[in-house]
Image (tube, helix red, strand yellow):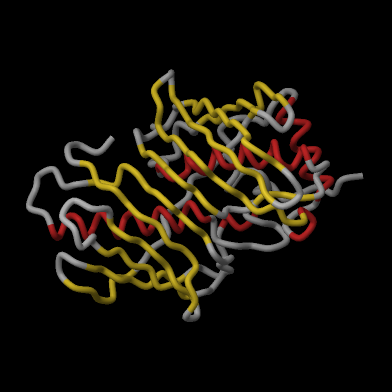
Length: 281
C-alpha cells in the first residue's frame, strides 16, 4: 500500500500533466497546463518540463530503481515564453539510456510555436530511493500514462533572489544567492533529499548575465540571453547554502558571456551565454 502524501506532493515543482505518447527508451510526448492564475512562468521552467519528461522515460526504463539528475546541457535555445493558460506540448528523444546515464534532447512548444529546445543533455542515473519513494513514483507514472494528473495544480514559484556583491563595470558581476531553508519546491525536488533545481540556479545566472549586459550596453532594447551552451552542474545544492554566482563578458567582442557558481569554495556550475538584440520573447 502506498502512503498518502501531503497535498503539495507532485504540485510545487512537477511539470508533466500527462504522457501522451511513449516508445520505451526511445521517445515520448507529454503536456503541461500553465495555470491561468500563476503569474509569470519562468522560461527555465519549460526546460525543466522537458527534463522531467525525459526523467519519467528513464525511470520507467530502469523499473523505478534509478533516476536521472541534472548534469550537462550541451545547448539550450530560449525561443519564447509561456503565458498563463498556455499548454506546453513536450517532446523528448532519447539518444541512449543505461544504468549510468541518460542522454537526450527535446523541446517545448505552445500551439506549434517552439519555446525552448534542448540538445546533447546528459543526466547521471542514481538510485531513485535516495531521492523519492519508488512505489509512489511508479504510481504517479501510471497515472500520467493513463487519465493524467488534474491540471492547474502548480501554484507558481518565485525566482531565487540574489544580491550583487561586486564586479568590474562592463566586464563582470558577482552576487550571493542564499538558498532558503524551506521552500515549496523542495516537496518535489526531492522529498528524501531536497536540493535546488538546476533550472532555478540557471535562471538566476541568466538574470545576472542580463544585468551585466544591460549595464555594459547602451542599446535599447537591451540584449537578452537567447542561447546557453556547455551548462554543467557539478554538485547538489542543499537548503540554507550560500552560493556565489557570477557572469563575465568575453574578451573578444561579441563573444558569449561566461556564467558560473561556487559553494564552499568549490564550483557547482559553469556555462556560456549568447545574447540576442531586439525585444525579448
